Length: 163
Image (cartoon, rainbow, N blue to C red; front, side, top):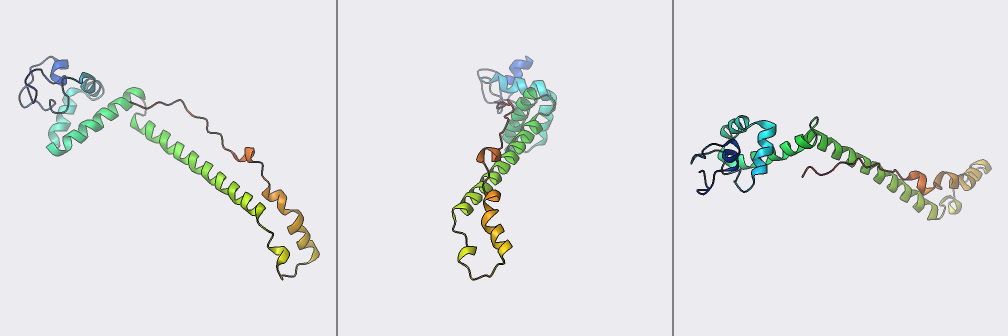
């Protein structure tokens, strides 16, 4: 019984067969965690998983099983998109957060510019009357943005962790 002499591995127990000493599933699907194999079997099939594991070097099999378990959970949670749905959701979340960060940085810059002394008043640059008037009187309307209009509200999709 591949590693556990007392009881068959989760695979052999679920499939109701004798667990051989060289059972490919026993190192990765212990009898005390039957759900782990059940979900992988439901999504991929025991025969396909067995073929995949046999084609891999022993050093990579544990990582492959972890990946299969993750992908099976994702596929059960989201039958259409599986892992791609989770990845897409997270990429959209990152994109939204980058946009919120850019708006916040622009708002900070506007506030900093409002609090700075106007550079043009003390400079030696000769400006005609119209330019001076525009710099002194129109600048505040371009810098004074109400903060509530700059906030991007993130409408959270009700997605849960796949675990």
